[in-house]
Image 1 (cartoon, one colour):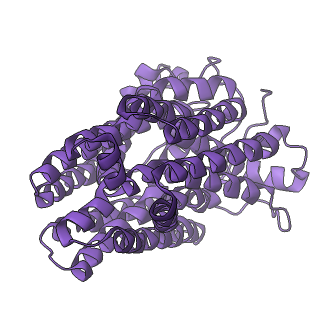
Image 2 (cartoon, rainbow, N blue to C red; image 1 turned 180 degrees about the vertical axis):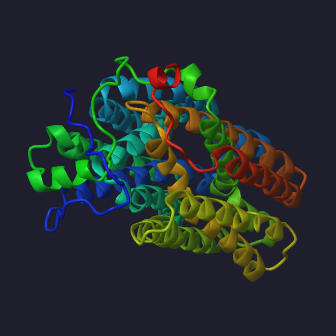
Length: 444
């Protein structure tokens, strides 16, 4: 990968040169959003198939919780190595291999003869999708000026919520009419189509021949992450980053977010069926409502509003910190769902919780590209995503244990407490989101 010119010095909040009529960067944002959408079709597929898998594989809720978390075992284990790999060989190659592996895993799951082979398919899915969010965060840092980065990030992060809003009913209808194997075949086909699209469309800005000189200048003058190697040739060392207060705060805060996110991603349809005795068709339709709210708040608040306020001259770190903390506070509303007994009340509390988490998520995912030293976005994204996947492993298992005791309220209470810890980490550790000095500068 060739070095690109570094970003022009100056105030990153001042509008750079105009790129009106040049929209290649937004095509890249849509491509990344489609990738996340299909990612989460793959992930939510399991929660929709809860009853069918329990029946066909003769397993209980505790075993289902293990299956739901299995994807995250390999996903978490690979986060830091994937971050290093992304910083060394780039988004294009890693992204292509990733998309191919996850499409194969979906077909493998569709034809799994038993629970062991199905578990292996979920582990393979975790391997394939492990680079997705660190890679897309790194790509967004390359392709977007700082004044557009929150909205660009929201385009792929909102897709994670939109996947549940539309994926749960679509997959649920497929399941009812054709069975769970058809739903996994469907997501496998979508994944392979994305692999072809990514192969064809994605390049870094400096290598994209369809990118106009005006748009490239706009990106670079807007304080985009520069391409190329750091002064040490390989990015900031992991030990250096792991000792950094901002990295620790961002990691704890986003892991707290992901606990509640994965609790609802893997258990919401089953919760509505078990707690409120709603049939499968209605449970998947009801599930789409809070995820739809999260999609809207993700784009409108975490994306558009944050960038708009920063461009209007508000202090960037105060805007982002306010959205992070307020969103997490709304996330605590999940506690109210545990005490509710009607579909309307449950959906209200769930919508408030997911709406808040949707609003803060794009800001959380833009942090690596805002604070990282050169060629270290992948590493910080990997560190963050390793911790978030530990939460993604824990939440389905813990919730499965309480589901077996018919006590979802306890699972929701634990989630609310973990969110409170995340709020403290954002305030006390992440703070002003200062850019981390290059290692040689810090040691000078």
